[in-house]
Length: 130
Image (cartoon, rainbow, N blue to C red):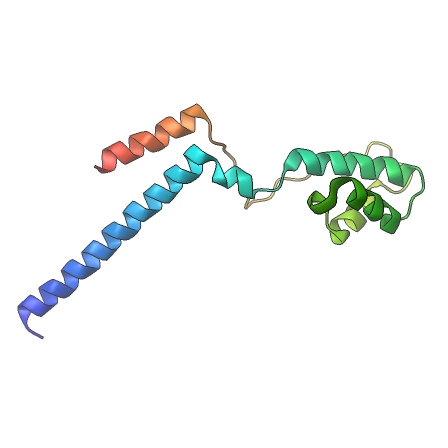
């Protein structure tokens, strides 16, 4: 391999890496500013409402299949899955009225949102990279 071929190969690799970094920054800014990240996340408020409804239905003595059917009638496509309904029904069964309807945090969930402070941080990072 000649020296100019090696130089050309390194230059192409450098340009590709720069392109990937710019693309990553662009996508990150897009997610923060437009809010696509939170749009793809499940609607946690609706899920919490469903867990509260499940707790009520379980305390009435309803079977998990009946609970699922009622949730599907009300929430349609935003309904909890069959597995989730059975899990939460099991949590709420028994005499323990203090069972929480709160979901435990998951390590993969984002810990921040598209706040003005976060948007300013992203814009600062972008301006520093130019």
